[in-house]
Image 1 (cartoon, rainbow, N blue to C red):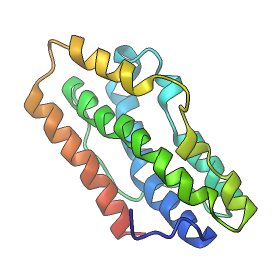
Image 2 (cartoon, helix red, strand yellow):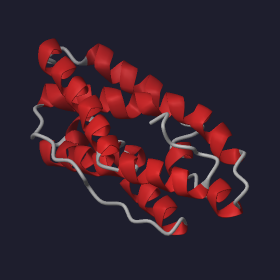
Image 3 (cartoon, one colour):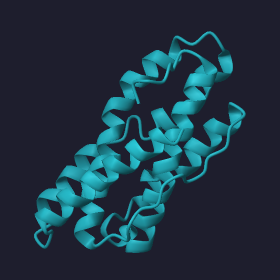
Length: 157
């Protein structure tokens, strides 16, 4: 993701399109696997609409560019680890976007700022600590697969 120039509208749009390419199928897989049963606050966590809104503002579209495998309950944990953890880095990316010359770019931050002020990472970690039935190997494999989905989406952008 560091290959994208977030200070320029076209670079930021490509970043968002690459991110959406993986985010959309990952979130769909989470829904199909029953993420809302594990995380009752799932509607607060999902970012597909936010990234679509940002892309619309920048003249782009959000669509899946990679496919992902169905998830197990432990796979939900691993995938959520990647998606929730990405919020931690988003605040640093927001600084680059804030320096953009184009006001449309500076305003298209629903995805990167999604969940700001909420304790989503902390509540994820609390859930993780209480999840006794989680197969650690499956969770780790799902996390690796989620990271790989983003890498494939960047390669296709």
